[in-house]
Image (cartoon, rainbow, N blue to C red; front, side):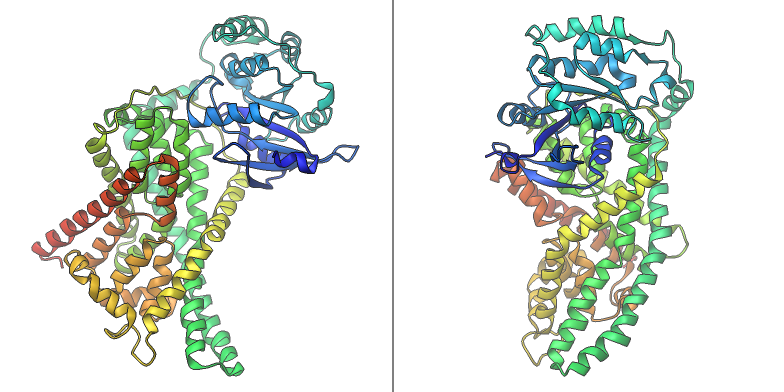
Length: 604
């Protein structure tokens, strides 16, 4: 049953092509408050938010549909939109069109018009159109389409009140008159609308953008610029995030020693319970929480790169290289998004129509160094490579390069198994000055979402590790007689050749569940305060072992959630097992090569 039919809410749908400002508009209309909703007949989750009620007290719900290029395509996102409009047609469809690209993006509006849906066209980024010499006669366009057409700028809150008033008058918007059917009809009517309603510049207007593109899209200079941007990003993350993390770690240690231990002792709890709460649960969770600022800064950097318009250009730049791997620029963008989290990046492969290309993309995404692994790498790099000041950032950057190397190798080896024949279409967005408020809000939301979606794994993981470390009763923590010691000894023949001691072995085993557990696991295993954890690890292993640990952490399965989403999106157990086995095998091989080569060179 339609979830909104029960509540009686008026249902609005937001549609548009990628890079039209649709997400910005959705956040502005809903106040940034949205939740994920499952829809009948759909195998995906859609964002749903609430709009302000009208004067009659009616409530409105806005559903953000995936960005698509047309209604006739075969990608999963396009099929989702098709099924949604067919099975749960909205009371009003708000079609988002980039005002500076109106001559090409009206095609989607014409296809929707042919479906008979009541439509409202929102010309977003209207403040940018004059910069490109584009002028849109919205009144003439509204007359030609016989639809409401409004110019807005969600970023600068221009025209938003008028748009909301028009939405509240949705009953006055009659279904659009049916246009002639067939794929050629929208094209013919589009050469007509563009001539009558849109004035385009005769020559290039934004010469600064052209000069920037000449550098950033150059096959050599553009690649060097991309590497420089990535290196600067990771140096900033380390330089800003680590000091904040260290201050938080000291604060949590102070709370543990001054407040938590005395409070638990005053209650009269048994020593085993006190140790469990203070050295297990508190130490594990507080260690993970102390790394939240690093996650925040990472997403702040990602928002800067994406909102400025650079991410799409990086995808365009890498399209030729990715084509040689059997992929395209979309795979590159998804791998970059995988730096945040592999799970939504894998779900994003729905935009790829060709199944072989989609499977190959899903095979390479797990090698993206996600935020959870980033936190581990920042910690290890700080413990072993803090001097000179640039060394730690360079080590982290090196492993990001290694993630691309692993993805490239995987694509080359498996492109014959999953050959692609799909075409890639990318419309470059204009350069923009990112809004600090929007960037901060996005970084905060992503950071909190990261913690709340992983808190169960983290909680169960640190509890499990502490129990393994301290059971059976009466044995020394992490001695050979403890459960953790026995487990570490069991896997030592397998992981010993790559330099892993029993403590690191246990951490890696629990890291298979979720990489977010790794730092909490180390804090519990080494039974030391957060401020002293780096010193404790540095005293027990060599820098070469640390590099081997980072290599294995980078390449082996990111987490169980990634495995689950690969199975769901591919619909193939064989493919999922292939991905799992390949990542584990490659991780062991590369870590062994690194560790054994280092020992031969006398570095171990």
